[in-house]
Amino acid sequence: MTDRADQLVTGDRIELRFPARGDLIVLARLVTSAISARAGFDIEELEDLRLAVGELCLLTLHGSDERYGDLCLELTVLGDAIGVVCTLERAAATDVPAPEGDEIARLSEQILDALVDEHGRESQDGSVRAWLRKCRGGHAG
Image 1 (tube, rainbow, N blue to C red):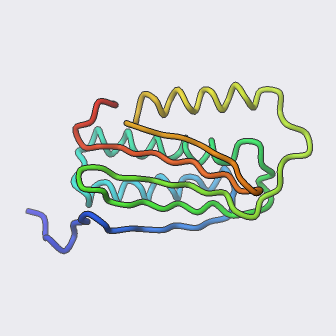
Image 2: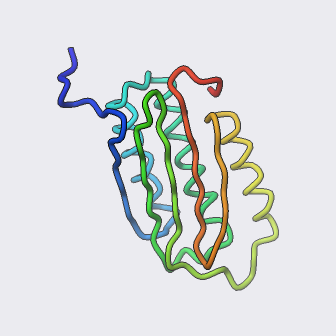
């Protein structure tokens, strides 16, 4: 039996900030697993969300210089859904874009299509923001 104090409810918001490095994305995945479990997601939905957040972070890092900046991950409980916003702050664009970069971004977007209900990405004023929404019992998965 789960203690009510262990549950997250609509409006609860968790923020995680860490250096914008690909090897630290595991932190985002771990936090996402804990949050989705406390928000009542089943094990399959939890795993989908954990994988999706990893892809969201990779998509946010796409085209940036990982040596600088921070990834800010914000998870919000939205009733029967979780919203995740990943923002890359204070990062520089790479000097030489990798030729396979666009293909990698497309692959991340296809993975997100399969795992979550909605997602998107935008760049503005040197910062990149990607977001997703995953519903309990949603079509994705």
